[in-house]
Image (cartoon, rainbow, N blue to C red; front, side, top):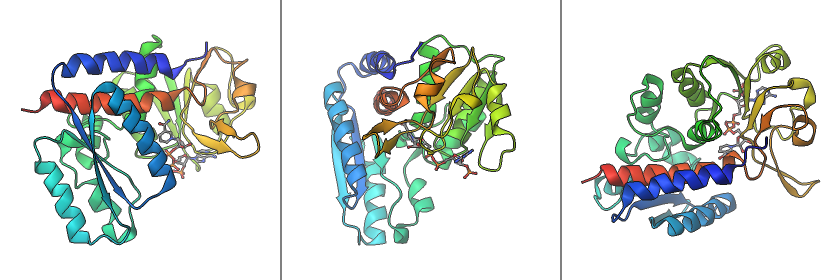
Length: 276
Ligand code: NDP
């Protein structure tokens, strides 16, 4: 089965609408500079938010913004009761200190799940703050398609703070047995072959073909890469080779990427419904 993301996104949107009812959630998007990929992501997200009745507040700074001005604005957004969620495009220019910026957002408004507080909530399974959206998108996808992770062997390839690490904890909380792989992992093929569920988030375009997989597996491809030769978006898994072998696989595009934004909007709606 091909696990399409749009159906999952639709279900999450319905949950979001049920949360807000007559309230108007507000998401502040903080951007420094005019990076084309930030702008393109912002356009897509704005469209999604408009559809969902979420108001966007754009907070834009020039690349040479003064450090104090920048952090004073984040503080203002933290205090502003009309703003429910804050999304900050990163990486930021070096003088703004990415680590400081990541933790500058108030936990209750950290809808992108980037602060240490939100990550601690994921690690302790206490629902403090919000989980990183992509990691949650993977869990939502499995849940929607009734793929239970309990007692399953799950191999995650990629250990970033936005995908692999939090996902390993979320899977563990759901009683999966997790193997977390990275560039120093020995016998990656073996780790993938023995898993019931393989999640790939390496950023290495179409680098995992048939030899990594076997029949009966579920493969979740988080990767989003632009293939210049094929002139289209591709995943980290070589879909054409892997899809005929495994039981379930997410496509790219129309897979996990389609779910991530709706998880972000869901978080904004949650933050709004929890606010006074
Ligand atoms: P990072 O570059 O931050 O992390 C990549 C991870 O993959 C690292 O842990 C790295 O290991 C590991 N890795 C890289 N190459 C290999 C390899 N050959 N074998 C084993 N492990 C490897 O990437 P992100 O986590 O930010 O993103 C991963 C992918 O997911 C990208 O394609 C990105 O575009 C996509 N993405 C998709 C989103 C969505 O909404 N669908 C959102 C965010 C990202 P090491 O730690 O040793 O360097």
